[in-house]
Length: 253
Image (cartoon, rainbow, N blue to C red; front, side, top):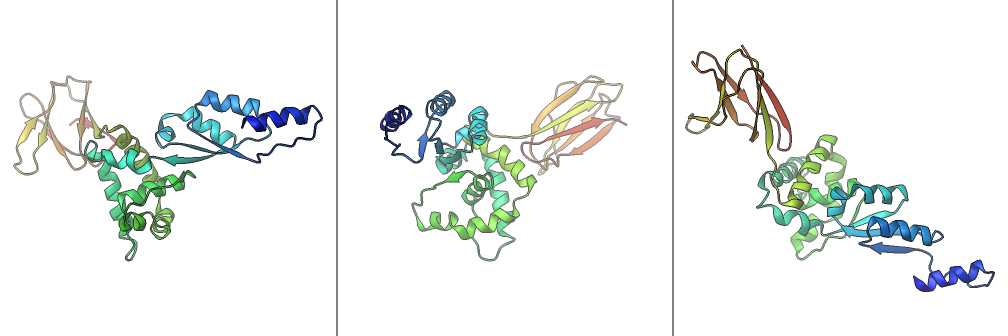
């Protein structure tokens, strides 16, 4: 790089010292470093930027800058930075598992794992990945055959789910279904969770006064029951929103 800069200066002075470097790539540059590089070396701009997969979701200014200057992003730490947190974020991981099962049902004999789904997401976003293949199983799930079986079937809904699940796995912070209960009655209410096995109604809320809203973290498929103080009003609600999504219920007659 220094030799390249030296030759550019000599060329500008009229001396015949053309640059030796046709193109360059950079790794782990901060945004300000990229701006300085582009300013001081305008003739030969980076063609590729290699960085941690974390940047894709958590450094939007850098990612926008790379896109605006047509610099290809190649990601590392894709598997280790995401899938290793599956025990800390099981709900987020279940989204990957559900998508892999759904997509594999559409294929005949093609292996589609959680890792395959993650790689397909990055390719869909035009992000380069070079996953390690420590075993024959990894080679199969990272193969062109497996990825080709996923990419044509990724819908906008799938992409939305992955953009919820992947950052949660990166941070090791699990996701839930956010459920809001708004009291549209003229009397206070309380919310109970309905145990699917015992049918026991477990109190999970404070007193919700008329016009007020209570928010609960829940799971898809959970059922709740709302009562007024005299238990003359009973309303049952089923959560059908997915992980990372929100659902609103109005408790009314």
